[in-house]
Every structure is written in C-alpha cells, then in structure tokens.
Amino acid sequence: MERIQKRIASCGVASRRKAEELIKEGRVKVNGVVVETLGYKLNPNDEVTVDDVVIAKVQKQYYVLNKPRAVISSVEDEHSRKTVLDFCSKEMLKDRLYPVGRLDYDTSGVLILTNDGEFANMIIHPRYHLPKTYRVMVNGILETESIKKMEKGVELEDGLTLPAKVRVRKKDFNIKKTTFDLTIQEGRNHQVKRMCEYFGHEVTSL
Ligand code: URA
Image (cartoon, rainbow, N blue to C red; front, top):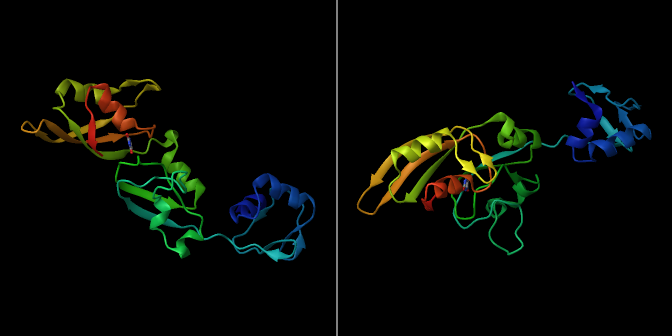
C-alpha cells in the first residue's frame, strides 16, 4: 500500500509537500471520490486524479552504461563537455535519467542511469556499504605494507576510510607499474586516487 502523497510525488506532479497541499485543497480524487486525508493508503490499481486529470505512474528505468574516459558523470556540463546523457536516445531522455554516483572525467567503467531516486539512494548512501571494485593502475610498485594499510583504513583529509580489499593483479618491474583491484565500501570524491596518493602512487588508469 502506497501513501497518496507519495504516489503524487513519484508521478512527478508535485513534491510531497505540494502534494499534501493539493490533497488539503480537495483537488485530489481516488476512483472519482475526493480524498482529503493525508496518508490515505492506495491500492496499486486505484486511479488518482489531480484537478480531474489522471496522473500516470512514471515507469522506472535502469540502464547500465560503460562510461568511457573523457565523459562527465552529470546531466549537464558548463564547459560543454560530453556527459553520460549524450549516450542516451531521445526516447530514453524523456525519463529524466541521471547517473547513480560518479566516476571521474578520466575514469571509465560501469555507471547506472536511472530515474528511480530510492534505488539510487540505496546504491550510493554510505549507510548501505555497497562494495565497489575499481581496476587501478599506478606508477610504482605497491608495497605489501601499503596494501595492508590500504585495506585497514587510510587517514584522508575527510577521515579514515572504511576497510577495503586489495587484489594485486600485476607488478611490472620493467615499467614500474602496479595493477590491482581495489574494493571499497564508500564513494567519496576521488577516493581511490586519494588513497593511492597517500602512499605516493599516482593513478595512471582507473
Ligand atoms: N575514485 C576515484 O578516485 N575516481 C573515481 O572515478 C571513482 C573512485
């Protein structure tokens, strides 16, 4: 059962607060009958109207994008750089998609686009500790001691990082580069790059 003001808000008609006003003003009907009770519980098939216009449920959409480098993870860019929405058709854009979380301009990888705010929140909110794995290449050879510390927690300027997991894939002593997978439970700004910089390693590919 869904509360009436939540349905009105999720259909994009108004914010929850504005929806409450519409209800109090007697402008909302359920199956043709005015409902002025805030929190009125709807059955899935109940028809809701605002000013006698039926409000349609917004179809929730989810896309997985393989974001290339040189693309910005937002819906617009003041410097006219390519954004993740440049990969969407006109049809897709009708759904007001936005990216779930961010990858840096020079980072490539999986990014979900959706119009489902609750879902997006569950993915990015630190409370849920959703693990995210990054394939990282850094300059230099990553020492075992640094790996242990990286896994335990690194003191960055915005606080200690949560426990992480490192899986070394390649230590190339010829070109002095290390490739590893880093799994973190948070999504702080530039977190992976900052964790590597802490140990003196510049990220060359993410
Ligand atoms: N950490 C970074 O430093 N950059 C990203 O794009 C993602 C995680």
